[in-house]
Length: 137
Image (cartoon, rainbow, N blue to C red):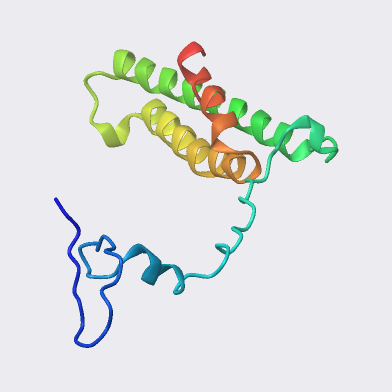
Protein backbone atom coordinates (compact mmCIF):
# COMPACT_ATOMS: atom_id res chain seq x y z
CA UNK A 1 0.00 0.00 0.00
CA UNK A 2 1.10 3.48 -0.80
CA UNK A 3 0.80 6.33 1.71
CA UNK A 4 -1.98 8.77 0.98
CA UNK A 5 -1.08 12.40 0.36
CA UNK A 6 -3.60 15.18 0.60
CA UNK A 7 -2.43 18.27 -1.30
CA UNK A 8 -4.09 21.51 -0.30
CA UNK A 9 -4.97 24.24 -2.79
CA UNK A 10 -2.22 26.72 -3.46
CA UNK A 11 0.48 25.02 -1.40
CA UNK A 12 3.37 23.01 -2.72
CA UNK A 13 2.95 19.25 -2.44
CA UNK A 14 4.40 17.87 0.79
CA UNK A 15 6.39 14.80 1.21
CA UNK A 16 3.98 11.96 1.74
CA UNK A 17 3.70 10.74 5.33
CA UNK A 18 1.98 7.55 6.40
CA UNK A 19 -1.21 8.12 8.34
CA UNK A 20 -2.41 5.88 11.12
CA UNK A 21 -5.99 4.74 11.47
CA UNK A 22 -6.95 7.93 13.37
CA UNK A 23 -5.83 10.15 10.53
CA UNK A 24 -2.83 11.57 12.45
CA UNK A 25 0.70 10.95 11.38
CA UNK A 26 3.41 9.84 13.76
CA UNK A 27 4.95 13.35 13.75
CA UNK A 28 1.63 14.98 14.69
CA UNK A 29 1.28 12.70 17.70
CA UNK A 30 4.72 13.43 19.17
CA UNK A 31 3.92 16.87 20.49
CA UNK A 32 0.99 15.75 22.60
CA UNK A 33 3.01 13.53 24.95
CA UNK A 34 5.36 14.73 27.70
CA UNK A 35 9.05 14.27 27.20
CA UNK A 36 9.33 11.36 29.63
CA UNK A 37 6.58 9.31 31.19
CA UNK A 38 6.05 9.96 34.88
CA UNK A 39 8.06 7.74 37.19
CA UNK A 40 6.14 4.95 38.88
CA UNK A 41 6.27 4.74 42.68
CA UNK A 42 8.23 1.83 44.10
CA UNK A 43 6.14 -1.30 44.68
CA UNK A 44 4.82 -1.84 48.17
CA UNK A 45 6.21 -4.80 50.04
CA UNK A 46 4.02 -6.69 52.50
CA UNK A 47 5.05 -6.65 56.13
CA UNK A 48 7.13 -9.68 56.93
CA UNK A 49 7.18 -11.74 60.09
CA UNK A 50 10.64 -13.16 59.63
CA UNK A 51 13.06 -13.72 62.46
CA UNK A 52 15.38 -11.20 60.83
CA UNK A 53 12.98 -8.33 61.59
CA UNK A 54 14.59 -7.86 65.02
CA UNK A 55 11.13 -7.76 66.54
CA UNK A 56 12.15 -10.15 69.27
CA UNK A 57 10.33 -13.07 70.81
CA UNK A 58 6.54 -12.86 70.94
CA UNK A 59 5.22 -14.97 73.83
CA UNK A 60 1.62 -14.36 72.75
CA UNK A 61 2.12 -16.77 69.83
CA UNK A 62 3.41 -19.48 72.18
CA UNK A 63 0.45 -18.96 74.50
CA UNK A 64 -1.92 -19.22 71.53
CA UNK A 65 -0.31 -22.48 70.38
CA UNK A 66 -0.53 -23.88 73.91
CA UNK A 67 -4.21 -22.98 74.19
CA UNK A 68 -4.90 -24.57 70.80
CA UNK A 69 -3.18 -27.80 71.89
CA UNK A 70 -5.13 -27.79 75.16
CA UNK A 71 -8.37 -27.23 73.25
CA UNK A 72 -7.60 -30.16 70.92
CA UNK A 73 -6.86 -32.40 73.91
CA UNK A 74 -10.03 -31.45 75.78
CA UNK A 75 -12.14 -31.91 72.65
CA UNK A 76 -10.71 -35.38 72.09
CA UNK A 77 -11.37 -36.39 75.69
CA UNK A 78 -14.92 -35.02 75.45
CA UNK A 79 -15.59 -37.02 72.28
CA UNK A 80 -14.28 -40.18 73.99
CA UNK A 81 -16.65 -39.55 76.92
CA UNK A 82 -19.55 -39.16 74.47
CA UNK A 83 -18.59 -42.42 72.73
CA UNK A 84 -18.33 -44.25 76.04
CA UNK A 85 -21.80 -42.94 76.93
CA UNK A 86 -23.19 -44.33 73.69
CA UNK A 87 -21.77 -47.76 74.61
CA UNK A 88 -22.83 -47.84 78.28
CA UNK A 89 -26.07 -45.85 78.28
CA UNK A 90 -27.45 -47.16 74.99
CA UNK A 91 -31.02 -47.76 76.09
CA UNK A 92 -31.55 -44.46 77.92
CA UNK A 93 -33.07 -41.33 76.40
CA UNK A 94 -30.59 -38.59 75.52
CA UNK A 95 -31.69 -36.23 78.30
CA UNK A 96 -30.84 -38.89 80.93
CA UNK A 97 -27.34 -39.70 79.65
CA UNK A 98 -25.11 -37.83 82.12
CA UNK A 99 -21.84 -38.83 80.47
CA UNK A 100 -23.00 -37.74 77.02
CA UNK A 101 -24.14 -34.35 78.35
CA UNK A 102 -20.80 -33.92 80.18
CA UNK A 103 -18.85 -34.70 76.98
CA UNK A 104 -21.02 -32.36 74.91
CA UNK A 105 -20.58 -29.48 77.38
CA UNK A 106 -16.81 -30.06 77.58
CA UNK A 107 -16.43 -30.12 73.78
CA UNK A 108 -18.59 -27.04 73.26
CA UNK A 109 -16.90 -25.06 76.03
CA UNK A 110 -13.44 -25.99 74.76
CA UNK A 111 -14.20 -24.99 71.18
CA UNK A 112 -16.00 -21.78 72.07
CA UNK A 113 -13.55 -20.53 74.66
CA UNK A 114 -10.04 -21.92 74.23
CA UNK A 115 -10.08 -22.14 70.44
CA UNK A 116 -11.39 -18.62 70.00
CA UNK A 117 -8.83 -17.16 72.41
CA UNK A 118 -6.04 -19.09 70.65
CA UNK A 119 -7.17 -17.78 67.25
CA UNK A 120 -6.98 -14.25 68.62
CA UNK A 121 -3.40 -14.73 69.83
CA UNK A 122 -1.72 -16.53 66.93
CA UNK A 123 -2.22 -16.65 63.15
CA UNK A 124 -4.35 -19.38 61.65
CA UNK A 125 -1.44 -20.65 59.56
CA UNK A 126 0.36 -21.60 62.77
CA UNK A 127 -2.68 -22.95 64.62
CA UNK A 128 -4.12 -25.16 61.87
CA UNK A 129 -1.59 -27.98 62.36
CA UNK A 130 -2.02 -27.72 66.13
CA UNK A 131 -5.79 -28.11 65.84
CA UNK A 132 -5.04 -31.18 63.71
CA UNK A 133 -3.59 -32.79 66.82
CA UNK A 134 -7.14 -33.69 67.82
CA UNK A 135 -6.84 -36.61 65.37
CA UNK A 136 -3.71 -37.85 67.15
CA UNK A 137 -5.12 -37.48 70.66
